[in-house]
Image 1 (tube, rainbow, N blue to C red):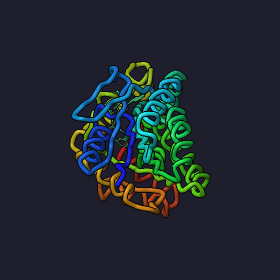
Image 2: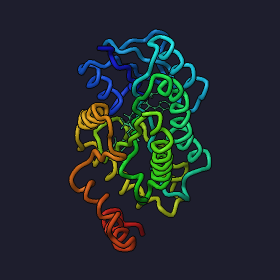
Image 3: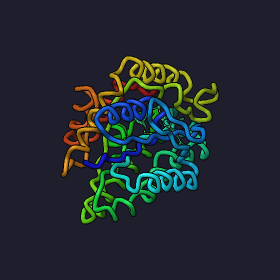
Image 4: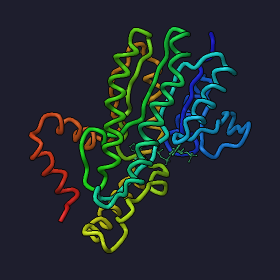
Length: 272
Ligand SMILES: NC(=O)c1ccc[n+]([C@@H]2O[C@H](COP(=O)([O-])OP(=O)(O)OC[C@H]3O[C@@H](n4cnc5c(N)ncnc54)[C@H](OP(=O)(O)O)[C@@H]3O)[C@@H](O)[C@H]2O)c1
């Protein structure tokens, strides 16, 4: 049987690294990416390609290289992404643009680079790593929520557009996962300044956000869900990868009146 070829973006840490390792032990030919990859880099047997989501030429070059080497790309796991914390009024336009270039525009470009090959070979899988924060706004994470929400909706469209080409599109919605996202997370330009009306409050909630990640589940939990999706001929649109409480919050958001759901969120993340 021909070995299936998978590209996982953001393979240098966290969910991407765990996914590369998990899929390669299950018989996939896995490629990873990192902005910092050196030429011909191989980590634990996995080739790592240089790719920066903010640089479209690097996206075309990495995916083009993989396709010319392997002759196909069976699955694209759009995992790379960046977090940001800070009240919307404390984030600068540059902060917002960087997050959208990374979490939305760059991911779209990865899809565009892989689709023609998947189409030509008769199908494939695109798995976009979103977040439970893509379904509802959270205090002090508005820019991140907006970027993941945009990712969710373009993925929904892509799923319909690519169905006739047998390219399955799904999103995975992690809750808190223990990765390096705390240290890599951007902070809104004014969020750590005493000039911000949110300064004291943000500090407290930010520590709570970081603690939730530091004590969360291992990223292999997400890798297993991604593997499961790749086994399915007809995967679902959405796969939560989160604790019971976080999965419950997704359901409550869908059924409760917004003011009740937001009241619950504001008890967890009080804004004064
Ligand atoms: N951890 C959580 O609690 C959580 C929850 C919900 C959703 N997620 C999502 O899960 C995905 C993975 O996050 P993680 O938690 O594993 O975070 P992480 O440990 O910080 O890893 C992020 C990865 O993304 C890559 N990356 C960042 N900016 C990039 C850019 N401009 N171009 C290319 N690659 C870039 C980094 O690679 P290099 O620095 O090597 O380039 C790194 O490998 C993200 O999309 C994140 O939003 C995470």
